[in-house]
Length: 116
Image (cartoon, rainbow, N blue to C red):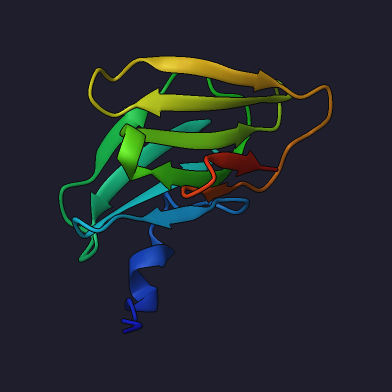
């Protein structure tokens, strides 16, 4: 079943242009913002906003959640890399150096492929 989220949740100053959103089964949303080069999470009602990555990102854009591995991937367009946050440890890792400028991501969790 598709559920709708009030659009007003996405009108806050921390939700800037060029952002992407990923939703989790535990009712949290994750997003990137190139304005502050950061990655955040919050409850779907907009409460409990948490900065997850506030340093080391360079124009983060596309974002994809991989719950089976407890990882949050994003396209780091400025550094031309795909990065991920280990949601258990809070450590950021480089998944790939792309050579191009990645913008969007998608994960096939059955085949374990990451597309950009």
